[in-house]
Image 1 (tube, rainbow, N blue to C red):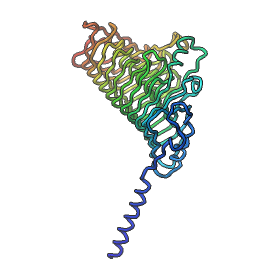
Image 2: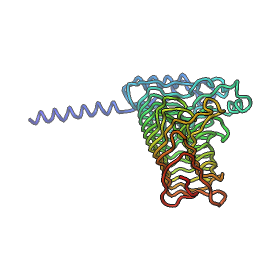
Image 3: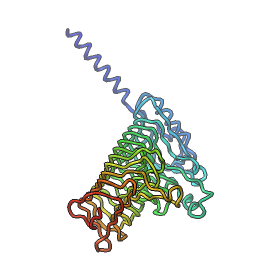
Length: 393
C-alpha cells in the first residue's frame, strides 16, 4: 500500500513538473530577430518572425520589444495559435511610415485576427497621421482613407494594458467580433480637429471592459457600434473629442442591436457631446436598450445629454425618412456639470419609433451659471430626484 502511495505521489509530482514546464513562458526579443531600434529600419519581418515562433509553440510566449523606436509597415498577426497565452511586452515605441500613402489604403496598421489569449502590455503606437489629416483638410478627394492603428477581429480573451496610441491615421483602436476584451490604462492622443480618429470603437462584440483610460482625439472618444452587448466603461476621461457615442446605428436595413451597456464615472472636458446615442434617419431593425449612464461630469460640453435619431451626413440616403431604431430603457443618473450651449438635454427621437423608458435621476446641468434648457421630441420617460434643466419627458 505504501509503495502505491509513493508511486501515486511521484506521478503527481511528475504531472506537476510537466505542467510547470509547459506554463513557463518563452521570450522572443524582436531585436534578437533583426529589429532595429532606430525608427528607420523596417522591422516588420522581425515582428512577424517573433509571432510565428510564439504562435507555433505549445508554451506561453512573451514577445519583447525593448526600449527604442521600431519602424513597422502594416502587419497582420494571425491565429489560431498552439497556445492561448501570448504577451507583447512593449518597452519602446512602434512607429508607422511617415508617408501616409504606404499604409493609407490598408484597413489596419497592426491587426490581430483569429487570436485567443493575447495581451499587449505597455508601449507607444505612433500612427504618424498628421500629414494625412492635412491632406483631408486641403482637398480630401485624392487622399487615402487611412489605417486603423490597432485592430482585433474574431478574437477572444484579449487584454490591452498601459498602451498609448498617438496620432492615428483613422481610428486608434477597433474591437470587432470579439468576446471578453479588457482594456485598462489606455491613453489615446490626437488633435481635436483630426478627422475620423475615434479613440476606441467596439462593434459585434460582447464582454468588453474599458477602464481607467484617458482619451483626447478628433472624433468619438468611445464609439459603440451595432451588435455590442455587455459593455462596461468606467473611469474614462474624454476631451477633446465627440464624447461617448452609441452609434451611429441604423445605417443598414438589417442590423444587430446594442444592449446592456454601462458607462460610469466619466469626465467630459470641452467635448462636442457628452453621452450620445445617434441613429440614421432611415428604416432599420436596429435597437439600443438597457443602457446606464451613471456618475458623469461635464465641463463646458456642447451637448451633454443627447439622443439624435435624425443623423444624415451630407443629407444623402435619408431625407424624408424616419429612423427604425428603437431606443428604450436608458437611464441617466448623477450627471452634473456645465453645458456650452443653452440646450443641455436633447431627446430628438424617431416619430415612428419613439424613445421609451428614458429615466433622468439627479441631473444638474447649467449654462453660463444659469438654468439650461431641455428639448424633447417623441420621447417618453420619468424623472427622480433633482433634475435640472427641468425635464421635458
